[in-house]
Length: 552
Image 1 (cartoon, rainbow, N blue to C red):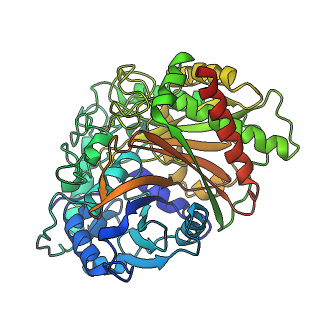
Image 2 (cartoon, helix red, strand yellow):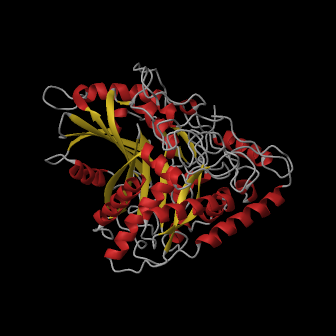
Image 3 (cartoon, rainbow, N blue to C red):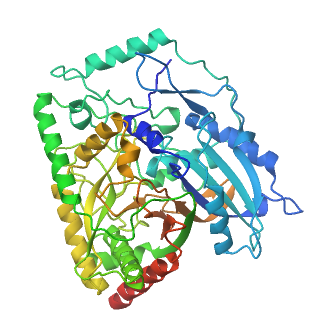
C-alpha cells in the first residue's frame, strides 16, 4: 500500500486555519444550465451525483481524509474515508433576485465563509440556480491542503468532467498499520541523511533537508500523473492549463554536502526576508474577521500580452500594475499618503529544477506571462526558458508559500515585489514593475523562503506570527487555467471566476485565473475593513483602460 504523507506546506495550511481564517480556495463556474435543470428549473441532482461519483474515480484525493498516525509514525497521511458519499458534498441553493453578478458574489461570500469539516474529504460543491438565461453557477470549495494553483485546476477538471461517465467499483482501504508507518518514516530519514545522495522530493537537498524536514513524497496519486486530467472527451482539457514537465517524476537531490546547501538556503532566506521586512504600514493590513467581500475585474489576455511586451515586461506585470492602480485609488480615497509609496507584494511563483536562486521542481507549465501555457494565454508562448528562474505562474498562496508538489506536481513559492503605488502614470508604473519583478526573480530564493516559513510553522507560532507580520502588504497570484472552452458537469463553461483566501493580517489579496482568452481577477477582502472595495475595482479598470488606450 502506498503511503502518502501531507507535505510540510499542507500542514502549515492546516495549522494557520481558524474560524476567521478558512484556508480553502474556490471557483465559480458559470455554465449553460439547460442540461443540468429539469422542466421546473430544479437541478438534476441524481445525474449530477452520478457524474461526480465517476469524477472522484480519477481524483482519489477527493475521497480521502487526513489521518494522524500517532507517536513516532511521522507526519499525518492521506487515507480513504470509509463513509465517503458524494451526496454529502453537494447542495443546491438559489440566488436572490434579480440573480446578477452582485447577488452571485454575495452568495458565494456566504457559502465559502466557514472552514471545511476535517472529518470528511476537504471539498464541497453548490449548484446555484436563479440566474438569468438558463445559466447555472457551480461553486466549488477546495482546501489548500488538497491542492492549489494548477494542481487544483487539474483536480477539479477530473471531478467535474471525467473522461468516462461510468462509475468504477471502489472499496475504501484501511489505514496502514502503525508499525509500517514507523518503518517507512525511519527509511525516509535514512534517505535524507547528509552525504547519502538519496534525498528525494521537491526541494530535497536544499531548503527542506537543511531545515531537518522529512523528505517530501510524490503524492500525486493516480489522478495526478504525468498525462494530466481530462476535462472532457472531444473538447479541450485542463491539460492545456499546463503540460506536466516531468509530471510525476520527483526532483532528486543533487550530490554535495548538505551543510553547504543549508548555508546557501538560509542566506537566500535572509536576503528575501530582509528585502521584504520594510513593508510600509497602511490600512491594507490589520486583523481580519469572518466576513469577506469579493469583486471581479476582467482583462483580455491578448491585449495584456501586447501591452506588456511594449513595456518590456510580462502579462503578469500588467496584472501587478493594474492592482497597484486600484490600491492607489483606495489609499487616496482614505486620505493616506501615496507619494513614493512602495507596497511589498508576495507574488506566487512556480519553481523548476535547475541551478539558480529558486531551484526546485514544478511539473506544471506557465510562466510570468502564460498562466494558461498556450497560445491563448497571456503570452501565447514562452518568452524565456525555465532555466532555474522562478516563473510567475503559481496559485493561491499565503505567507507559508503554497505547496511543495504533493498534489499534481504543483510546487509554489513566492518572491517579494515592490509595487510603486506612488506612480500615478500606469505606463511608467508598468515599466517600473517589469524591472522590479525581473530583479526579484534574479535575486530572491523562493525555495529558501518556503523553508524558513516551514521552520516557523514547526514551532507552532505560524498563526500568531502571521497576524503580526510586517513582511508583505498583500498577495497576488496567477493561476493557469484552460486556454480553450471546457465543460463542467457536462455543460459548456461560460466563465471561471477564482476565489482566494485571506490569512494573518493580509486583509486583501488578488487571485487571477486565465480561461479561454480572458484573465479574470478576483479581489477578496475583509468585509469590515473594506466597505470601499468598489474603489479598488474602479481604479483597476481605469488603469487597464489607460494602458490599452495608450497602446491603441
